[in-house]
Length: 112
Image 1: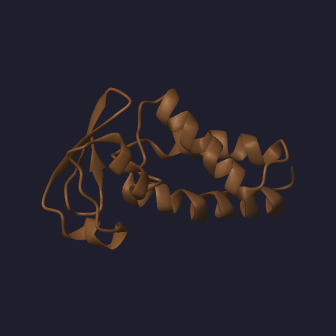
Image 2 (image 1 turned 30 degrees about the horizontal axis):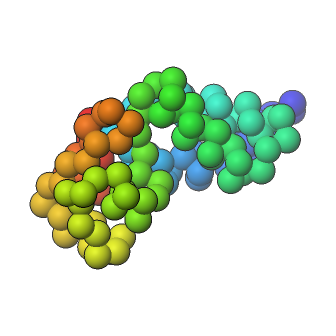
């Protein structure tokens, strides 16, 4: 891969990682970049590569990302969602995801 192509792929990766970065608990960026870049190099679309990186982060690194806020309602009877827009107004809500407790701290981040 030439330098210009690599630079473009790194820019694309950074753009797609931004959404994960803003919502996921603290993590090492390279743990997300590696599966994303690997997937793109093997023919995945950017969306498929983002999915692959998210799966890696969840299954290998134990970092959960709330990629489907509406789906949280089905995971816990204690969660009452009025829509994704109301999430910013939550003071603190705790839900269980795959046997790990994750907490919305109201600042735009989920913490373990």
